[in-house]
Amino acid sequence: MVQTNPGQGASQAKVQFGYIRHRDQDQATPAEHPVVVVGAGPVGLSFAIDLAQRGHAVVVLDDADRIGEGSRAICFSKRSLDYWDRLGVGDRMVDKGVVWNVGRIFHGPSELYQFNLLPEPGHKRPAFINLQQFYAEAYLVDRVNALPSISLRWRNKVTALEQRNDHAVLTIETPDGPYRVSAQYVIACDGARSSLRQMVGAGFSGKVFEDQFLIADVKMTAEFPTERWFWFDPPFHAGRSALLHRQPDDIWRIDLQLSRFADPIVEKQPDNVRPRIARMLGHDQFEFEWISLYKFQCRRMERFIHGRVIFAGDSAHQVSPFGARGANSGLEDAENLAWKLDRVLSGSSPEALLETYHLERSAAADENIRESTRATDFMAPNSHQEARLRKVVLALARETEFGKRMVNGGRLSVPSVYDTPLSTEDEAVWQAGPCPGTSMPDAPLRAADGRQLHLTDAFNALGRRFTLLSFANGGAIDVPDDVGVVSIGGPDGLADSEGFAGRRYAAEPGTSYLLRPDGYVAARFRHPSRAAIEAAVARACRIN
Image 1: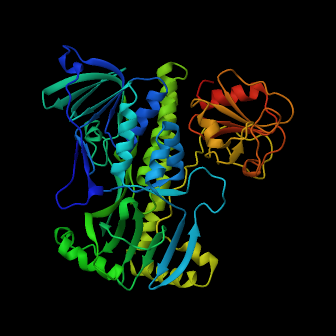
Image 2 (image 1 turned 90 degrees about the horizontal axis):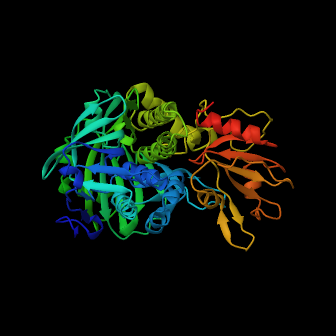
């Protein structure tokens, strides 16, 4: 059922889901499940879809029964879109979303510079789309409902956790009363106020910034280009910063920096917000869709794994929204964890492989927190010295390239780089190409029948497993049975008709890249042998 919030626009519609009693609630002893996901946000839903597509049954619990509580996250990166392609929802996200690659930075009334996050063509997906989180969640729920191995249960609130040696038992409150389930693994995707984090007794350390920011989603017709615009000290909001983004349905996201002493209750009143937005736009022909106030938080758990409970997304780490590092890093958590848990559940890898989820994603969280903290310190200086530094940097940016590089209006999310023992070190000397631990670059290709496709399409078609990307050298490579192959060049391979793949992978005849199931480079070879490929797979799976 779809309901529209009173006083809100049609794009702010809520999707309401009915509570349905499950047969687990009638069992005398806790029903046993391999995996229970707590939280039906983008991270929890994406993880559940990923694991289900790998052949595992998943239960998803959420204490609410609706989506559509404001836009919240709106910027989804190319890496997230590549992941959603593998989950079968990428086209819906991009078709509805607003595509953008260009951003502009302003100081006062003047433009300092602009940047293009994806200047070279030949990619299936753009650098970013803007899409309200409630749309993303709705599309993910549709995909979940198409997968019979996922049981999605609304108004199921976890109220207690008991950890055992090889499983965990959850107590769940529902409109029909409590019941219990047992899970080999519990995946906590229950957000920044995670109740599961409290149940395992884990802290959340880091920094909460005192400066406040106002978010207003407004509906209006405007001719602004589809770009990210960020201002330092704009004439309509003197001494502060501002951000403007287009969303679907003629909705525009506006962020305005406020004083740390501003009264949140007063500042959120529409009558007080309207004059601020009118000064920015030069008119008051708009309607409010959503208004919120927030403070930056840059925090994380010390460990993402607590016994049988594994934390992902905002339940594990938080960053400021500038830079779009929150939801996108959570989705990277999901794809990192899903392939590893798949191997552990199927008995293909030891449980020790899960520790590398914490190793890789906690390091990624640290990097996101560093970048987010630097952006916050630049946007909202905490001392006279920091304010002087920003003033000098902004002045230099008008005249110099190095000055532009020092300006920080929120560095945008990029794929994480994993410096971990799962990667096999290079034996050959490489002058370019993606090194082990980095995300695979995309490239346009052509099939033998003339069909146009992308490298990410060819990778996705192989069923989410280890894949050898091989640039033909005239001879077949002896590849292990459980490793897929994408061949580029040669009579039977895909054609690199525009040369992007060869350049991006620094390819020579015989060059090969071993890709992990999440699309990260595990190893690269100039001339691989079966033994070398097997050793690299074993290393990446912790089975040697």
